Length: 531
Image (tube, rainbow, N blue to C red):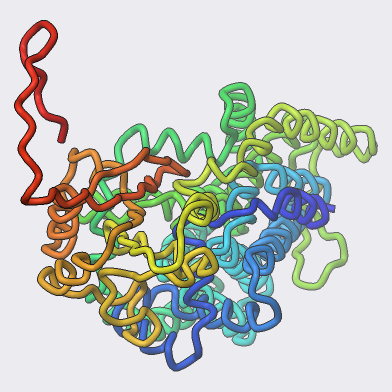
């Protein structure tokens, strides 16, 4: 049921009619050949390399934005099912049901389920690795179990290297479960567990060495990030527990109730739901935030996989409130260990149904947030709207300038409206040059090219057109200088945070025409000239 609900939420409004800049990169890179993608990874985006090859295979079926997002939708549905499986294994089936449904209706999960990026797939891999981790610990640390765990986590880290922080969360779960174990038992049974986990973790880290070495040389790509603050942490809490304080407050109280229950964080020899879910939710974001105080690296989507732990904590708290929290008993499943039964166990389906109805109410309360998220304006920009604005006026032979160069992403993703136009500053195409947006021509060459143009369309950052900010490169500054000197700009059209403006060449005055005498102003001081 959680998988089906997540699938329905993910498919709802999947065709937004426009991609934003990161999705557009996935789309235009995925349509390149395998050698061209490999060439690109030597320059940028090595951390997304495996995902780009996956997207390439998907887009070979049909190159469209809906198809681009389908892997994320399916991955989110798998994640909801895995969250449910964790709750059922660690506590009770209905806790798993509640946790899986809570994940499915979370706006943060729904947001990234509809993005053509790797984060939903990373969340599925991390949650699957966590389930394999629990099975390996409960099953006596068989070598095959740890091998499967290491393989899944290693593949997940190759989808995004920050998934490696999951190792810190799992180490925390082992440490919490070990608390209260007598020294003699600790040295025997838990020695095998730590050795099995340590070998798997070591294999994951060794496999990541090539990516780390390459991605360190591409660190300039995240130079735009800032140090996380208390507001950043608050936003992440609301993303995990609910965007409104009504839902977030109730969920936080349930989390505290679950942590205070008899099946709390400390396992005393047995791994518990809270002992797994709390480190999963807290440790990866906390480690990345602390590391980002020295070198900013934190974005909430980088730790989306930590969201999987929050519904488990909320569901465990709901079970505690219902008066049925206890340590799981032997239900005959392979790998489970007999434990004392809870003191009170309510098997009434009304309790389960009450929890499902409460989740449905939370979904209805958050429905406006989910509906607004289907609007392309909810993303940082809307390149589809930009391309449509250009298509309404661009004529064959017109020039096009992109300020800064990464705005060329519009033409690479939606090339139709730009056919027949002249990309004034392009020296070498994106695919052939092994870059995301192509190589820019020099400032002198751009000036020479603009001399033969009467109409130039500019797709730009609005701050550059208004003069609030200057281009960082010489080519961009040369483009703006020629536009202001030789062209007159028409009305600016803003689409999704991007400005589109037509510039028309100023008429050349005839040298034989007599100069008009200056006209005195009707009244008042002279007006300053417009820039």
